[in-house]
Every structure is written in structure tokens, then in C-alpha cells.
Length: 124
Image (tube, rainbow, N blue to C red; front, side, top):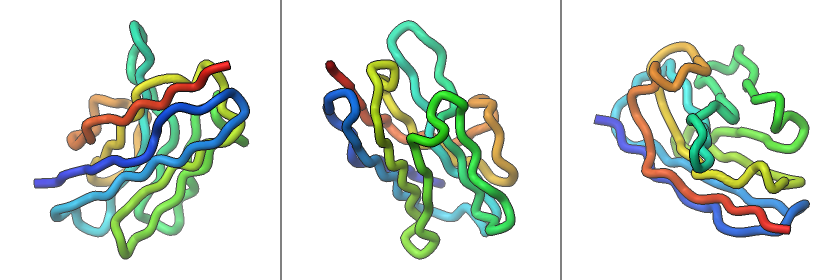
């Protein structure tokens, strides 16, 4: 069984920065994808950023966050980080960490393991 534990998030003003973390526990092999999705009220859950355990695969970002968000991983701690900069009102959402075995995918249905979510609120 895989467990994902998120931390970080909170409230910030536009233009500010936040970092969220996701620690993975359990057995998930050596080839997997971890990443962040977000869901705003009344909207579907969408991919924000994904990173593979493979060092040969580059990170994947939604167009809306490219250049502002950076995803990184610590393989020793089995932890993925999402550094968010220049936050905008539209970034307000519940952020979910997710993990799937194998390749990364933007399809939420292909991710079997999910964290509880952490709220990010951006205000003017």
C-alpha cells in the first residue's frame, strides 16, 4: 500500500511564493511518476506538474504554470516538492499529490494513489 502525505500550502498574496511537499510511503518500485494536480471549486481536477523517477525524463508542466512553478524530487526521502512563485489568483485550489507506477500521464484516472490535498489560497 502506498501512502502520500502532503504538507505546506496556505494563504499568500498575489505575486508571493509557497512550497508544497509530498512524502511517499510504502513500496512503489523503482519506476513511477509523482506529481501535483489541483482542483478549484466547481472545476475538474487537472495536472499541474509531474516528475518521473527516471533521470532520463524531464518534468512536465501545465502551460498555466510554466516558468512559475518548479517540481523537484528527493529520491532518498521519496519526497516531491512543488515550488510555486509569482502566484496568481487563478492558482487558488486544493492541491493533490498523486503517484502511479510507470510513465507519467496527465490523465487523473491513471493515478491510483492520492494524497488528502492541501489548500492553496491566493488573494489580492
